[in-house]
Length: 246
Image (cartoon, rainbow, N blue to C red):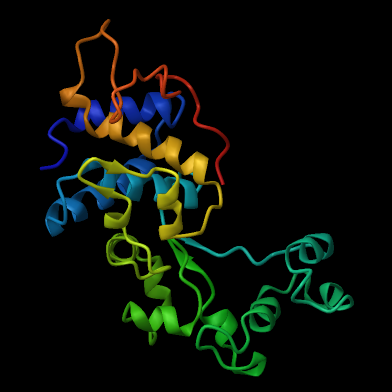
């Protein structure tokens, strides 16, 4: 097993990422990812698993459960978020109508048909890392049953294989974590360019400390991160909340 000390792992996750309180839902989500990683025997490099966990943590706001894209926008929210995609008068027509909105903004993209096809809403974002568009659902074998992306086991497999194989953006975990190489900021490209890269880097390094719980020094001695600096120097000391969540 890549995590010999489960109790130590959850103690550290609770202290550093969930300020003292870890819900059963979040524990279940962690367990699904940890069990799948062990079962697949993909890598013993804890940095890779840590970045997978950090990605799920960020994308779900800490819930660690598959989610469905929130398409309930106000007029102002639509103008701000989709200002280059919508005509000026469209927000009034689309605000509060998630199905119409999805069919409009995802029409004729990512393998979808036109707005009348209903593909935009049918293949809206779902999962731990929300896949969107017919072509992406097809890539993961669920084009005929897109709601399967919300099943915990399936969502975890999409998350892990997408990050290991580079299915999301063409970038893979192995491109950023191999041997002595550890590019915590660049690894965000595996899923979403540079968006919130510093936050993801912080979460991932906190997860490395948690995954290594059984290897860390005795209480009272300074902990070291994967780069050798103390946890305090790395900004990862226990009890310090790692920035705002998504």
